[in-house]
Length: 249
Image 1 (cartoon, rainbow, N blue to C red):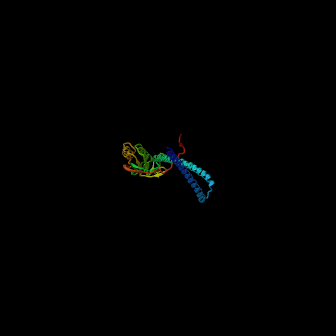
Image 2 (cartoon, rainbow, N blue to C red; image 1 turned 90 degrees about the vertical axis):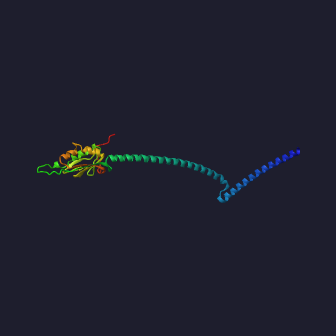
Image 3 (tube, rainbow, N blue to C red; image 1 turned 135 degrees about the vertical axis):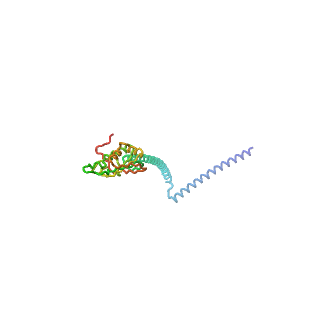
């Protein structure tokens, strides 16, 4: 038994010595590696070994700064996305405002329009004048044009022009000699009225007994009213001037 215990003890001592030797070998390897690294740094980078700790500290600081900059980049990207979303929303609002402005321009008569409607033509009376007759009895007056245009608007006309002059809210009709002033422009017969709107309703209304066209026919004036599948009414070319009219709150 003593021989066996002695042998076991010898084996344990050998293992302990082997482990210790292994530790020494690893430590020696690490020392040699560190020395080699220092020599390599000195030779290639020409940095003294006593400054390695300083460089390591600087490196750690730079890494922290880099992390801070990366966080700032992320925050800036979030801001850019927010700005882009705001731009998209702004474009949507701008598009809506543009559509609203286009509707207002349409209602103000500032854009040309086209569609089905009614074509009306008025001419002076061909009846010969006898000596002493009043020439005003054979010419179309501005009141006749006003009566016809009012009936067209009353029967659904959405846009209307007389001899190419768009009729808008500020349009005035006045007689100037044998011509008529429309939008400060002289127009002469024949007077051609183009009205975009419901053709059947407008035709039935202006052709009714006792209407403006019926009265003109009774006095011998050549008048014509024809439905059209498509008419083009030009835009108003004048200017709007409001001297006394001011917007209210």
